[in-house]
Length: 388
Length: 188
Image 1 (cartoon, rainbow over the protein chains, first blue to last red):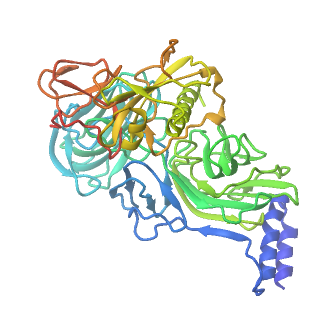
Image 2 (cartoon, each protein chain N blue to C red):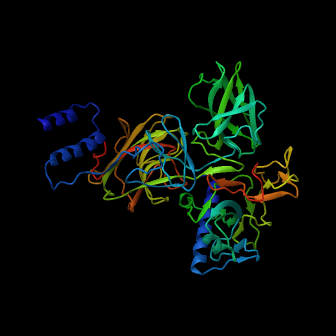
Image 3 (cartoon, rainbow over the protein chains, first blue to last red):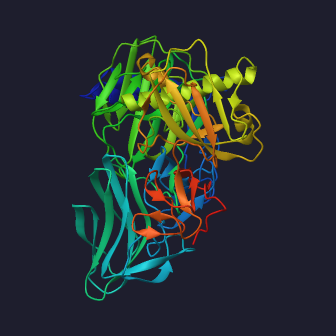
C-alpha cells in the first residue's frame, strides 16, 4: 500500500520532472531499506544550526567549526544586543548568522553626545539595546557627524526607540539624501532606520527628531559600504571593522558523483551579489559550489565557478526564509538546483573536483561570497534525493 | 571582482608568498635599525607596476619575521606591497588572509602608487614608526588641530587632516575589539 501511494504521487504529478524524480526515488530507496540493519542512510549530515543553548550565547552549533577574528554584535529575537568575542558564533532562533567583513565609518557609535558628534539637543542617557550601556537621548533637533568614506554605494543606519512624547518621528540623512520622516512607535521596541545613499567621499550623517515633546534614544549608528545594513559594528575613537566569518562542516562521505545538499537561508538583503550557501574548496578555480547564487538574478546554482551548469533565477527578500537544495547524479547524468518548490531544469552532470575534507557554509572563506544572513537546517546526502 | 579588488587580493597573496620564503630562510628582510621597519626584495616575481597599502594586525612572531630586531607584542602595522597588476589572474587571486596577518579591508584613503624601479616589493611599518609614509593621528594634547577642533580627544584623524606638535600617529582603522588606541592619547 505504501509503495502504491508513493508511486501514485509520482505518476500523477503534472509537474513531474527529472528533478522531481531525483528527489523522490532515493526516498523510496531509503524507505525500502527501513528495517534492514545493514542499510546505509543516504543522509550523511543533518544539522539544525539553531541555538544549542540560548540565543547569542556564543556557542557554536554542534558539528560546526566557526571562526571570526574580531568582536561582533548579536541581536536576539527579543531585540537585545550582545557583544560576542572573536570566534564566538552568533546563533539566534533564525539560525547561524554568517556575514562578511565590514567597516563602520562612523565614530562613537553608541555615544551620540560625544564629539565628533554634534548634538545640541542630546540629553540624559537611557539604557541601550544591550541593557548594559547608557546611550544619550536626542530631543527635538538633529544629531550629526561628518565622515569621509569611500565613494560609491553606502548605507547608513541607526537603531531608535521613543523615550518621551507621542507621535514622534525621525529622518535619517546623508547630505541631501533623506529617508523619512519615519514614525517611531510610542514607547515601543528598538527599530532600525536605514538609508541607502551614494557617497561623494565627504558626507554628513544626521538624524533629525521631530514631534512635540519628543525624545528618541539612538544606538548602534553605522555607515558601511554596500546596500545591505549588516549587524552593528561598535566603534569608539577609530573606525572599526568586523572580520569576515566562515563556518565549516566535515565533508565526511559526501560523494563527488552522487549526492545532494540543502539549507535554509534567511537573508538580511540581496543586491544580486554572489553568495555561497554550501561550497567545497576555499579558492577559485577548483572549488565546487554545492549551493550558491551568482551575480545578477541567479538565486540558486550548483557546479563549478560560473553560472551553472544548473541555475535558477529569482531573488532574495530580506527576512524571508528560503530553502535551497541541489542534487547531482553521475549515473543519471543529471544535476538540478531548487529554491523552495521551484527547481531548475535538469542539466547534464559535470564532473566535480575532489571535495577535500570540509564544506564551508555561508561563505567561501573569510573574505569572499558571504550570504549576509542566517542559515539553518543543513542536510547533506550521498543520494540525489536525500536532501528534502 | 573589480581591478581594485584584484589588486589588493594579489598584493596579499604576494605578501604571503614572501612570508613563506622568509620563513624558509631563502629571503632576508632588512630594516632601518629601529626595530619597527622591515623591507623585502623578492626575486623571480613579475616586475611590479603598482603598490598598495594595507593596514593590519599581526602577531608578534609574524612581525619578528618581517621586521629585523622587532621586540614587542602583537601590533598593528602598515604594509606596502608592490605587484604586477597585469599579471593578476581573476578568480585565482581571491584573498587568503592568514590569522598571522589580519589585513584590514582596503581603504580608499590612500590610492595605489606607481612602482618605481629599485623599490622593495614589500615594506612594513609597525605602529609607532615615525617615518611611515602616512598615518592617522590622535591628540595627545591641545596642540593638535583637526577640522574645526583643537586638541579634540578620543577621535582618530584621517591622513592629511591633522597638524600640530601634539598629534600622535596611529592606525586609521582597527578590528572590532582590538583597540589601536595608543597610550599617549587620552581617550576623553
